Image 1 (cartoon, rainbow, N blue to C red):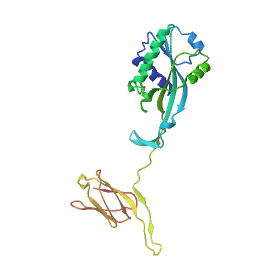
Image 2 (image 1 turned 90 degrees about the vertical axis):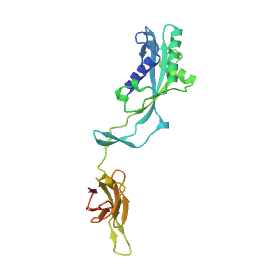
Image 3 (image 1 turned 135 degrees about the horizontal axis):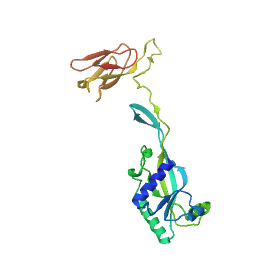
Image 4 (image 1 turned 180 degrees about the horizontal axis):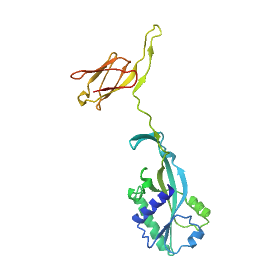
Length: 256
């Protein structure tokens, strides 16, 4: 994923600044003294120096997705922050300031990286947000000391994106009925009623009343209903003419 974010950032800045590939290089190596000494033309360095889980945007649970006709429950993606130090390098100080200023304007003008700059590997997550980070001068100095480099102006930029979750878990078969038993402790009477799911294939039955011996309901807008009944009960769908069907031992019912 990190290389895909690098590609997205380079594509975005080359278009938004713009940065002509014939005149300006874009590199991602640590900008230490050795790296800087080897440059031979203007370069924008985009250095990833920190990767953090974004606790302020944590998402829990799973979400259903349909893949090749099957329902998969996929764990929610993990929100992440990717922190970059962006610097401009040139033999002329004026050129560095011009490049850095143009990059600053591009970041400030866009809340996220447009979809056109994202590869297929990032298509499953929302477009990454791009913002300027609030970083103290002391932290900036510490970063340059760690790089063994000379302190110079740079932009601290945060890319907020998501780490996709693991592969989805196939959904089980749909629940057609829920069984439970009622009993009276003072007598020998008991009832093994269950929630029976039904489907009516005739669209004219939508909204019709459905009757069982001890319960009623109505057919919903897609021709389905659920009602409490026991095996052997007769269900009556009040259409013209009425339709009847007997509750089976297991499963739901389909009424033609």
